[in-house]
Each structure stands twice: as C-alpha cells, then as structure tokens.
Image 1 (cartoon, rainbow over the protein chains, first blue to last red):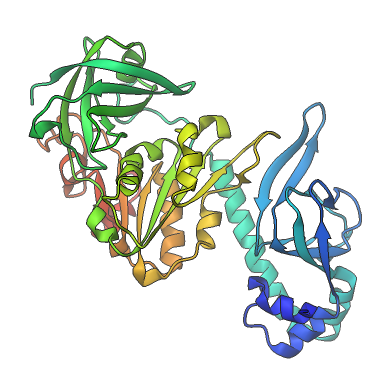
Image 2: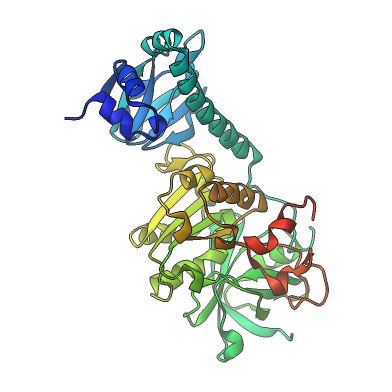
Length: 160
Length: 267
C-alpha cells in the first residue's frame, strides 16, 4: 500500500519537489474517498483543508436563490481544489461536490501553515505552486467572461 | 464561377440559431471537396455567403451547417427541403490530413468551429485519415449550443473526445470550464503531434498559447481563418489578410506561415 508521501509524489502539483519536503507535507495528509453527491467543501464553512484529486470529478458551485446550485467549473484527475485555508478568515468561498466517486488526498491546512511558517523555503515552494494554479484559474475565469463562443457581428455575411 | 442550382434534400435544426442543409452533389470533379474547404451558398434575391462543408467527403450529398446572423444566412434559414439554392465551389485550401499520418492529431473546435472539422472526423471514421491517435476537444458556450450532439457519443467510442462548456445547468454531466484547461493536461508528445484548430479567433489565440506552451512547433499547428469572403477566388480583395487572401490561400493556414499576421491587432 502506498504511503501519503508516495501518493503526493505521483501528483502533478508536487512534481519535482524534493523527497524531504514531500515527507514533511505527507504528515499533514490523509487519503479520502467521497461518494457521489457528497460535499468536499461548503460555502462559508471553515476551510481547514485542500484537496488533490487523484480520480473522479468535482463540481465547484455556488447556490443561487430560486435557481439552485450553479456549476462554475469542474475539476478532474490531477487538479487541486482549495486555497481558502491559506488566508484569513479561512472560510470556503464556494461549494465543492463530488460528481463521481472522488479519490483525493486531503491536506490539513493548519498543519501545513505551521510547517510553512517554520520553514519559509518550503513555504515559498508551496506558494509558487499555488500562485501558478491561481493564475491559471484567473486566466480561465477571464476567458469564460469573454464569452468567446458568443454571437458576434457578421463577417462572412451581410449586416442585418 | 457560375452557381449550380441544387435542391435541398434535408434540413435540420442544430440549435435555435444554427441549422444544417443537405443537398445532392452533382457528379463530376467540381463536386469533390477536401475537408476544410468551403462553398459559396447563394440564397436567391439575398446574396452569397461562404460556408464550410461539414459533411463527409465520401458521401453523395453536400452538407453545410450555418449560423443565422445576417441577411443571407437568415434567407438560407427560411429555406426548406425541396427549395433550391445556388452553390459555387468548393474553394480554398483544406486541412492537411497527410501531416497527421502516424502522429497524434489534436482536433480543437470551438462553437460553430466543429462544422469545418467534422469532415476530418469522418475521414478518420472512414479510414482515410491514419493518425497514431486522435483527440477531439470541443468547447461550446452551453450544452444546448453544441453541434451534432447525437453523433458525439458514437465518436467517443472511436477516439478520445473531450467536451466542455462555459456554462451549464444541473442536467449537464460533462465538463464545465474553458477549452484551454483540458488541453493543458492532454497526453501528447510534442514532436509527434499535429493540431487542427477552428473556432472564434480569440479562442484559437488562447488554444495556440497552450499548444506552444506544451512544446508544439508553430509548423505543426493549423487553423481555419474567417474573413469577409466574397468572390472566393482571390480577385475581389475583400478577404485580404496581410499578403494572403483567406479564400484562396486559406481558409486553413499553417500557424508558422501566418503567426506574424495573426498577432497584428485589428488586421
């Protein structure tokens, strides 16, 4: 059976991180399984963890009054979810719900924060990785806002 | 240059503003087309519009999928089975299918951009296109705006198909998110991969950024451009784009050949 450190080593988020750091981070992790429909996170609930998705799909959602949950994005094998544990007030901003059976490594945010405070080099390594993910998600959100498939003025055709 | 008068055999609604017309091909060399080429469709009394062929190159019929958003396409939308329209073509340069032979082929389509790429899919299914493997990435605004939904399931049994939508309600069980995300994690060996990209220009720009970031060479990326094509034979100049005429030199271009022009704003 693989250890948490072994599983972390296989995950793209921790690619090229040195073995000692992975062992240290592994001490904050647990292997978890979420059945279909179960929430990994709930908006405004304490954000004590973040998740490395090993397999399965997770919907990042928000609840709209009179409309129900709205899916903003789906996450898949190899993705990570959650950075609310990094910054006060440590509360989830969105819901995260398992669309399939989700196998994930759940990392304890408080445990990680303490280790990063004690070891700023490790903290910087982790921050760089989170910054990259955040940048990619921001870019994706901007592209979504552009509505790139939306109706545009005619080009090939005569104007109405 | 004289339109042939063809009878519509079948008309099908794809989405509320997009429809597909199928009409018989006349026998002869002028009826053959390469995937990626287009025809000029003439709605009598309204005008002509350039529309890519979206059916199989091996079929006896010509198929075009059209979005209604202007005078001519609205006139085409009013046509029904049994009506006639004028057809000139095929025109332009299509997808370089031979470049994909023995390689991983990434077919990346956004919105209506799946229509000019569907003949590529048919070529694969008919055994004429022989890549080592093929992955089709198809992004749309909403599930209801996806083209050819009845065919997608069948396609996914023949090759890797990744569909994603920007927005979805609760009954959609697929991916939600921009098309660039699954591209970032697609399994590929950059020097053994060719990409065919078609969709809104801004979508193609972002996809090309990701492909270049994954190590693909500009010479291995092909895209279909859209400009105001009128004569379709490179005479009128309406579709001039830098030194190129999109109707004659394209609509499919190798990115290595046009990257300079692709980067110039408002060109």
